[in-house]
Length: 383
Ligand code: SF4
Image (tube, rainbow, N blue to C red; front, side, top):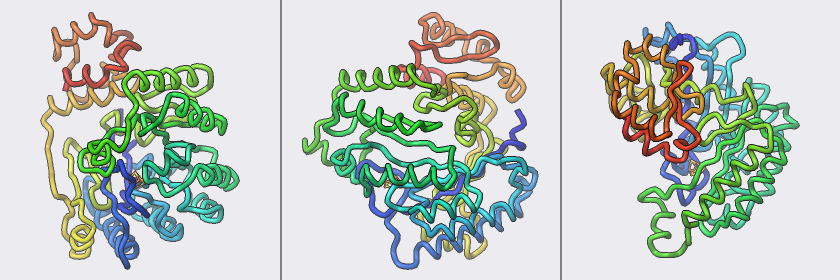
């Protein structure tokens, strides 16, 4: 695995039109002048990282503009950022995957055409649900009709590589409600689906509402029915589960995220973005004003720099790799770290294999069908 030749480039856009009730991501509603200042700082930062020796030797195979809500920026600004990335950084010449996250209600048909022209070839659309009541409960800014319109406009703009983000386990949601959202999503024949169970994060409005008993979250039995609905729908269609929460047509997996799960190298730009290069993890300040100030002053934006030792990096690579159904390749681990999972984990691994949670065969270590729903528990033993 040539880490330098297939690096990922991530840009974090830390703005949303309104904060969703469940959201703990770093994003905020922009104040006057914020968008322009951020875009200028980002372009400056692109120039600054282009000078770094550790970046010059990379080749970026993927670009992912995420957030937040990148589509809250004027499309012209997104196009300028993409042009700057291509101009200043070593982006792979042959067919890089260029994804942008968009939320319905923040980009129109013309904007999508412009984005496609700017070189974006993959959209990740934050749909979450096709039920207006559920969307309102989550504090989403869009309706189901706007989600449908965004999908249609994206197709008309020439995007065939569309991914939808969906969430289940929503307040008040039944298995039948989830089935309806799932059916509607699949009726659009997406090439990629990301489906996550809602988690109630501390400090969010949703957590407060749940504490005050304003919402009833689906119980475990209902969640299991929702998961079974996913298995049945996927089993009957052409999408293939390739990661715990991600499904794609063959060869349409998100290459950017696969690199991340393989613990490959990636450079993160923007406030709060994380970079993982050459065994070092750097996290940028998660504060817009501070980020802009540092970039404008030509100073590094890292709030935290962590160097993982060989064994910690190995364990992390195993645990992240197990998120993918293909698991991890023993030979790759040996070449990268000089370590072998069977020898390194010894009896722990033997037990997990014996219990039928993991399978070690054909040079790979992976979760079994039995181990998948218990992935977090299994990974906790290997971390
Ligand atoms: S759109 Fe996404 S990032 Fe923005 S507030 Fe909602 S969940 Fe958070």
